[in-house]
Image 1 (cartoon, rainbow, N blue to C red):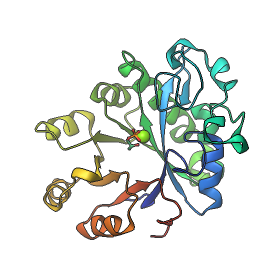
Image 2 (image 1 turned 90 degrees about the vertical axis):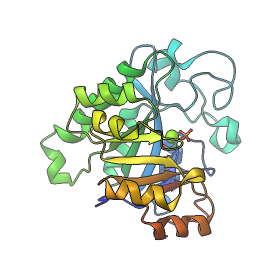
Image 3 (image 1 turned 90 degrees about the horizontal axis):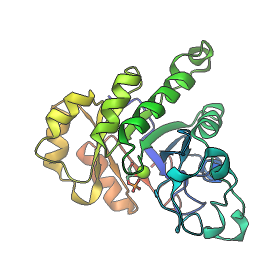
Length: 250
Ligand code: G3P
Ligand code: MG
């Protein structure tokens, strides 16, 4: 059974606020979403921050690599202007800041571990440990009804390290298309669910995964008709960029 929200705002707010920023989380919350997906990478000093691309140039102007900058440096960078002047100076947030915001607003998180090249295990371990510290350990977590995030990754090495560091934080095996060795990978990382690209997803794959006992989630669904079909097939949930077309109660 999928105990989480069905519809998640991809990268925080899809195409309506700069991805992977607090502005995006605020946008999702204001528009009624109680679930978000976002990407987390490590800074040079091994602090998890929200970021999709390992290199600057798209959401952060200029040249350089995320892994070569400290969290303090990244927090001083403008991750919003690329989307328009309204978002100028929106900083790169730390995972901790976003997790605190989401927890305070009862927004559930699918945290995608997005390691910079060469940092798979370290990123998996650090993100999982941070999630455990923020959501599993605190005595107030149960009282607050805090719901532990689900960690997903395309990197099996990151998921294995996450499992070792914080076995009680659930994990999802994230793939474009289901590969031959999916079952052994799911078992190795003790996956709760499998997350797949909706483009390649078929009803047979959904049946197969459900039969094997896994939750089934897909990315990124921007066409309501396709979303309806996937849910009819038994997909548990999906993330979307089109918050204007697919509402939180879709
Ligand atoms: O977690 C699902 C989805 O976000 C994976 O693709 O590139 O948008 O992070 P991407
Ligand atoms: Mg992602």
